[in-house]
Each structure stands twice: as C-alpha cells, then as structure tokens.
Length: 395
Image 1 (cartoon, helix red, strand yellow):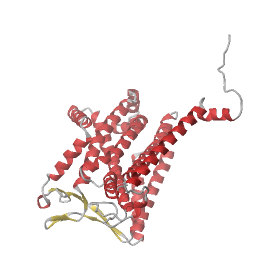
Image 2 (image 1 turned 30 degrees about the vertical axis):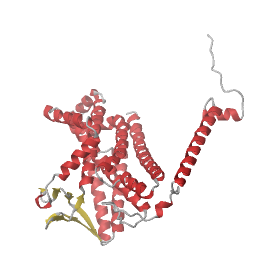
Image 3 (image 1 turned 90 degrees about the horizontal axis):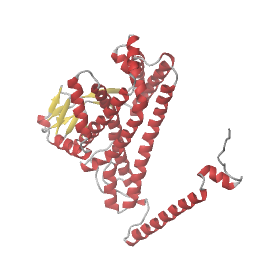
Image 4 (image 1 turned 60 degrees about the horizontal axis):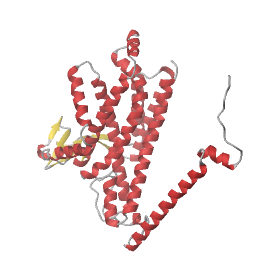
C-alpha cells in the first residue's frame, strides 16, 4: 500500500506567514485590496471637488447646526431650532422603538399561529393557512397603505370605537391605558431593573438545578414584581394606571399611538408573524414523532410535551431562520417614510434636503442600519449557540 501526501507550504519566512493568514495568493489579494482602496479614494476626491464646486462643504459640521423643521412624534422631545444631531437621534429612537416592538409582537403572534397551524381542528388550521398564504404573498408596502387607510377611516374621537371603555380606536390614533410615574423616574427605573435582574437570575439558577418549569417561571415573576414594588415603595414613588377617557372633542389620558405608528407596527407584525408562523411549523415538524410518543408514555400532557420536549428541540431549527426575519423587519421598517412616520430614513431625508449634505446623510444612514443589524445578529447568534449547545448535549 502506498500513501501520498499533498505538498505543503514551501519555505519558511514572511511569505509563509502571509500565505497562512491570507491563503495561497497573498500578494494578489493585497494588490486587489489596494486597487479597491485607490478606486474609492479617487471617487471620494471627485465627490469632494463636485461638492466644493456647487458650494457644499463636505463634512459633518452640519450636525451642530439648528434644524428648521418639526418632528411629529418621538421618544425624546424635539422642536424646531434644535440641532440636526438631536433630530437624527429622534429618528433613530423611533426606528428602534418600532423595530423592538415589532420583533416581540411578531414573535408572540407567529409562535401562536405556528402552533395553531398544526392543531387537529381543521377550521382553525385552515384559517391560519389562508392567513399565512395571503400575508406572505402580498407586498409589505401595499399592506402599509391598507393599514394607514384603515386607521384614517376610523370614526372621530367622539364616536371612537371602544373596548371595555379602556381602549379607543379613532382616526387620531389608538388610545390604550398607560403607566404614569409619580416621583423619581430614576428610582422607578432602578427598582424595575433590579426586580427584572433578580427574576432572571432566579430563573437561571432554577433551570440549572431542577430544569425550567411553570412553577419556576411563576416564582421568578412573583419575585421580580415583589422586588420592584418594594424598591418603588421605599423610594417614595408611585406608579398608577392612567385610563383614557373621552373629554370634549378628544380623548385624554392613557398612552396614544399615532395613526402612522399604529399602521406601521400593525403592518410589520402581521407581515412577519406569518413568516415566523411557517418557521415555527417547520421547526415543530422537524422533531421526530417518537419524541411525542415517548413523552406521552411518561404521562405528559400535550401542552407539557410541546413546552418541555418539542419546542426546546425545534429551537435549533427556528432560531437561525427567525434571526433572518428580525433583520428583515429592522430594514423594512424604513418603509415608514411612505406613510409619514418620522423614522430614521424620513428624518435623514429631510436633513439631506435642508442642508445639501446628501452624501453625509446617506453615510450616516448606512452606518446606523449596519450597526443595528449587526447588533441584532450578534444577540441572536449568542442565543443560537446556547440553544445549539443545550440541544447538542447527550441526554
């Protein structure tokens, strides 16, 4: 018997190190990189000359200038005369708010629809199937136009649609009960953060010792609420629920969602919940039928089987595909500009038009969306590794 070996890298020295880092053709790769850098340098120089010729000074000094436009809504306050940097921050926070709420609500609705799709009830399964097919095969922009038209077609506040006299739907937006902090907002935030951290810590310790159960989840929730409530009481602050009510020709109190925000959030949740529902359905069906039969032989009910046996294994299939949906949701939130919601794209577009710094505004937009998506991808990859490791351990 004869054996043959593939030739290795020839000779020690600098070239061998470069080959180990860059591959078998390091010099060619370095040359290509230098050529790309030179090309972008030439393009940048030409762009700077063109901007100088038309009277636009390149750079980001415009961020310290006063913005002469208003922003309809924002997480933080803004008024005409504030600097452009604050206006961009308002747009960023608006984008993060709708993306975060969209991911959470789309996940909750998508998981529920995915499980319902596999139910033994043919009517429920058929309704979910048609929902998924219609939503997934309709453009998101068209759906946003539908939702904003639907919201604007709602009755005025005096004839608003009411649900338990606590939730009101009108052409001025959606009004829901909201929490009002009386006292030190910092103390309330610190108490809520402490309660949440202690609850999560208790849940992790319980899972490591006895596994995750409904009793442990309930105990962690009670612990978090008790600690947060105690911290708020010790700080002298209070939190009360403000319920909206009809006052005159408008609705006062509670928390209001503008028509644009409500339409955008609804469109994103509906669109991506359909995709997540299909991912959840495929993930559940990827678990072998023998797992169900073994769990039933141990006396577990269907709900316990789904929560304790099937979903933990299905997460290895669900998580990577759901990550892609989260990234798409963050990027597709930029369609808010089509229905008038002041997100990052809308505000940077206005900034570019009023300052003439279109290239800088576009660069800021690219960098921010890149950071947002890389952050989402990093967090989901960390969670995916935890799921994969847990699923890959021998029983």
